[in-house]
Structures are given as C-alpha cells and as structure tokens.
Image 1 (cartoon, rainbow, N blue to C red):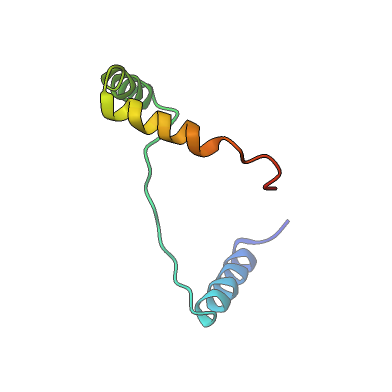
Image 2 (cartoon, rainbow, N blue to C red):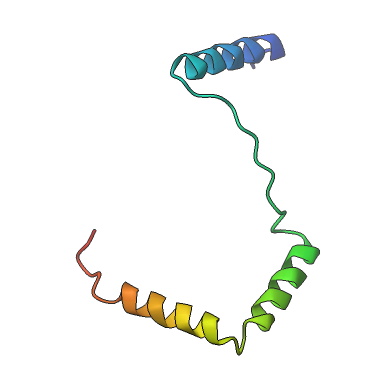
Length: 73
C-alpha cells in the first residue's frame, strides 16, 4: 500500500511535468446528473421544446447531416 506522502510526491512530480509541458490545472464544476433536481429540470427543458419550430429545424438538420456517413470510420 502506498503512503500518503508517497502519493503526494508522485502527484507533485506529475503536476511539475505537466506544468513543464506548458499545461496548467483547471477545475470544472458541472451539474450532478444523478440528482433528482437535474432530472426534473432536464424533463422540463425537453418538454418546453416539444412544439418549438426552431428545435424541429435543428433536429431535421442533424438528421440530414448524419445521413451518408457510412464508411467514415
């Protein structure tokens, strides 16, 4: 089992390598997709788009763009 100081040193070295490569750490906070509030808000948003003409246009565009892509991979 690795000690916490060993893990800390490994993490410090990893971060130093990443910074030396020109990168910096960034933290992102995103909605918790497991929460009931998220599910309820998602349902509300989807229902609000049900008869929206702009949404229908976007869906038609996406379907048209997705046709004929066989063999791209």
